[in-house]
Length: 401
Image (cartoon, rainbow, N blue to C red):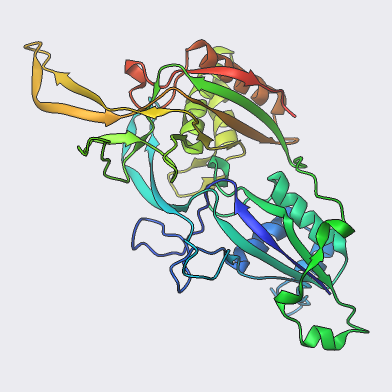
C-alpha cells in the first residue's frame, strides 16, 4: 500500500461549484468552517479521465455495475478531500472572489439576458492533497506528472484559464506498507506517519505537457486596459465611487481573463478564415475549436485553452468621461461617469491546443495571424476598445511546442 501527501497550490483560479446559488449563480464548495475545499470525487474524476479508457484503467479506478451482466470492480486508489492547508483559526482561508461573464454576439455586443456571475477561489490557494493506492508507484507518479504539466485541470471553465494546479514537490511525503508483513502498521495508520521523502525514491515529475501544444507570449500594455468588473462596487483611492473598474485579482493586480482572450481570438479567428477563403467552412471550424451551445441546449466543448493573464507593474487610475448630446454638441444631462482602467505593465498569455486536433496546422496558422494583428494594433481587447483601450505589444513570443 502506498500513501502520498503534498501541498497542492492553485496556479490559476478555481471554480469548484457546490450547486448552491446563495452568493452568485454558482457558489464554490465550502466546508463547515467556511473554507473552500476540493471534493475527492472531483479529484478522482479528472484523474480517471486523464488515463486512457481501458480495462487497465478500470482496474485502478474501479468500474460501476451498469447492467446485471457487468462485473463491478472496486477502486484500488482512494482520494481524500483536499482541504485548506492549516487547520488553525489563525491561518486565513484562501480568497474567494466574484466574477461575472456575458455572452457577446457577432459584433462583440452583449446579448440580452446572457449575463451571469460565479464565485472563484483565487490563485495561490493551498490545499492538502492525499492519495492511497494498492499498486505500483507508476500510477501515483503519472497523476503528479499530469497535474504539474497542466494536463489534469480541475473544475469548471478549464478552457478559459481556470483549474490549473501544482503539486509542491518540496512538501511531497510518502509511506509504503507491505500488507503481508506490516499489517499492524496498516491497521494503526495515521497520516502523521507519512514522512518519507518522495524525491529520494522517484525523480521529480516533468512539467512538459503530453496532451497539448503550447504557445506562450509576453506582452506589454501600450494604451490602457479595461476589462470591466461588474461584480464589485469600486472605490477609488480618494474614497469616491467609480462606475466600473478594471478586473483585478485579490492582490490588486489587473487581470485579462481567459474568457476575454477567448472572445477576442474567436471573433478575429472567424474573420481571418473568411478573408483567407474559408468562408463556407469558417463557422464550423470556429465552433469546433471554440465550442458552442446550440439553441436546443446541446453543447460542444471548446478545444482551445486560454490562460488568465495577470498584469504586473500596472497602475489603476480614474478616467472621467461624459456623453455628448449629438444635437447640441454639449455634455449630456446626467451622463457623467467615471471608470478605473489600468495603465502600463505587461503579462503573459498561454494558449494550448490538443495534439493531433483536426485541422491543427490551419488553426495554429490563424492563431499566429491573430497574434500578429494584436502586435500591429489591428486587434485590441476589452471595453472601450473603440476609444483607444486594449492595445497591446507582443514583447516575446515562443514557438508552438
